[in-house]
Image 1 (cartoon, helix red, strand yellow):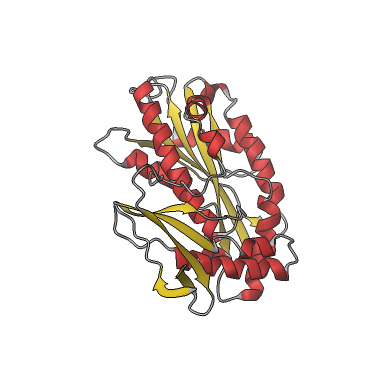
Image 2 (tube, helix red, strand yellow; image 1 turned 120 degrees about the vertical axis):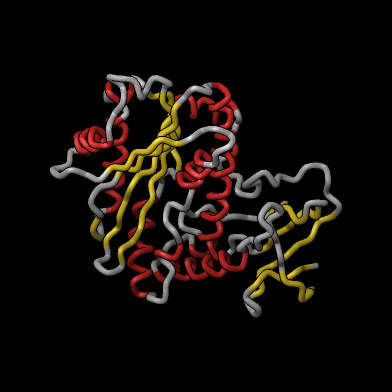
Length: 313
């Protein structure tokens, strides 16, 4: 039976309440859109995170068991995936920094013109091929140790276009800033224009990232790369008719794609840490993995009447 005890799951570090209610409400709206659009997965998406079992520990509640739908646009899964990617990437970068303490980290953002309705999947596919070409160029490859990249998409509702751009955290050799090696922002723009085969000069941003333990710049960059591929407020708004068009475009464009891609030493470290074997694990999304300090478990179930998670026994 239900007890009217509402879930309150707070972060030990920040004290903030984790957004289970907010993300589940968005998940239900998203599943309704999928049903209207006749996507077969609509029913499965609606059951995502329906029942949450937590372990009770000295540090508070730790997610112990649930079922996630893993749909790319599911707000619940996207939130957990972002936490997981950020935590794991910090592990990878920490190990990389220990292995190559003199390495230089750069944060590169590649942009291009926005996609019109019906063009997004084609342009994303072409962009991925262009990035592959970019990193094959001698000017880039000679100092490259590794990288991790993600694609972000923002939606312009005024003219219904989709702005796809790429965030890349580059790990370069220590001599990158020496004569004959350093690439200016203008040079990066030229290389991207060539790789992307554009008839205009694209906007590119490149900046150095401090990697010292006293500076949080590298952690901030990891979070930037790991953030949501598409934020749910871009496709869940008060405009249901417009939302349906946006969701349909995004679903077809993102099907079968990856959120993060690794190369070089960062890919090797990810493999050595066995993180590529845990890609679908959205339960242990951060360093809150349950160990041996469990003093009990508690279960919460989504209750449509109160639009929140309520304790279940």
